[in-house]
Length: 117
Length: 110
Image 1 (tube, rainbow over the protein chains, first blue to last red):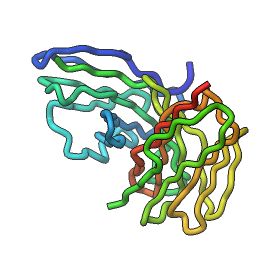
Image 2: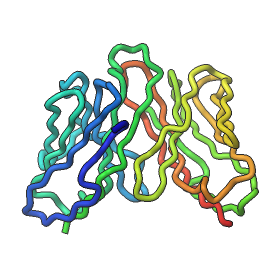
Image 3: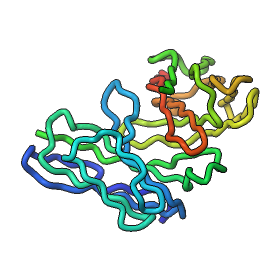
Image 4: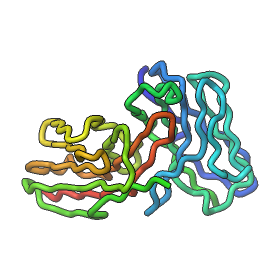
């Protein structure tokens, strides 16, 4: 299996539920990202992990909790979400950009469509 | 704050027509990427341009990076329904995060 795989593809949850999104990359990259894509808005960067260390947290509410146990796996734990959190959540991977020598290319998964009721 | 603008926001054309979409910024980027995203899917990388003035071709798609590395264009020749999707540009600088434009939503009608 190659590329970036996200599960589940679709998730419907109530505001009191706890769920997790999973991402796995098979590209040998060591940086992973969570993005949020809402209708009529540009992609919003949520979290960046490089070599399993969180290097970016863009003022994301604490109801979103990322976890990166190794360079191939990334999770987004969801708890007491709001209806406005409904969106497509995209995982991506790249080479470690802190090396400063790459042209910079992101490889995305197919996304997890989240609906919060 | 680095920003990328894309134009037009929406474009609906007939099969066989040519089109150009634009990606503009006041900031300089080390490289710029173009992605295409189909409904319900994640963005797929089409091309990366690195050198000012660079032109890259991918079948019927021609990508150009501005001389000053602040802007880019994507030209599609003889568009086909399979070209339908959201076209995103993203700018990158060493050691910084990617900056995404809002996208151009293209619809090619048969």
